[in-house]
Image (spheres, helix red, strand yellow):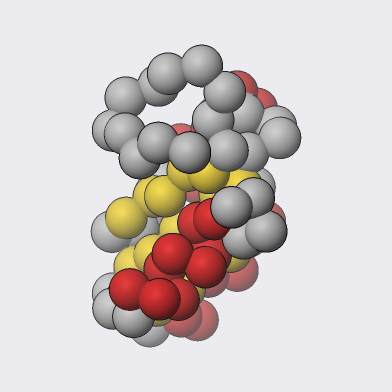
Length: 81
């Protein structure tokens, strides 16, 4: 697995870092384009403000930032290592 900021072949995981209000359509578009990918969304706002919307829009995980490096790695790689 390779970490990249550009699309390159198969995409196993997508990390949307820094969720902001109004990104519902962006998440829906990502889910539509990458239906098999694991989508992780992180944000600094209180969870109640955005977590539900992110999950309903196609994210597999919605977490408050910051995360430990170990947890971030686990969420992005899952059992695909």
